[in-house]
Image (cartoon, rainbow, N blue to C red):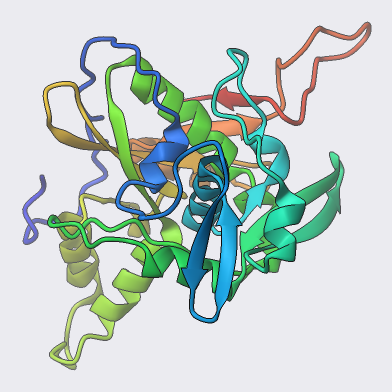
Length: 292
């Protein structure tokens, strides 16, 4: 790590050490249900909460936890992978009618998308059945849409996670939780507005101190925050993380450069996701390309 008192330097952070390859059969969605005392089996079970009783299967528990962990998720990203794994075989209509999730339809140049988020009741259900982790690294759950202008981008982050989590698992790792930029930005604002901050505090020093404490990087005077941080346990039991960004056509060259110099793993949508068309380049809006 950098010393908190050193001057800012545009230094690329070395990526976490990658262990040897080992296959795992566990679904990446299971990372979000660890510590949740909710149904895990295929058959639905009754769950009493407040003045209501819900019927949930294990697949529905995992789906609720994944939606809550990412705040918004494109329903298409719950489809099974090429091996038939990690899909959702529950019933979204059942979860909507139970008042646990809500669905929003957005339309962009790629067409219509069904975007899912937890209701307040859904979030409260997860929080009430979550056990406190001894290391304090609790998986946070969110409800509702807070950034409508960024909805299309944010709804794709679960798909990005699935891609990178698959890579981590192939390397022998086991995902333990994800941290979204919401959480880091909240902590940063609280740090800048801490009660004991002196009136003459230096903003640049504060920026470096926060970066040091959270293993982040400052590039060109800007604190680089990833879209999501994936925390995982390596095969030999070490806790590592991978910072991931979904870059879009709206990113400037300077923004992309800052993300890559900070050591982030970057993805973009489209590209070579299918067969080339005559007279044009192949473009698949569901395809994610790892660019760094």
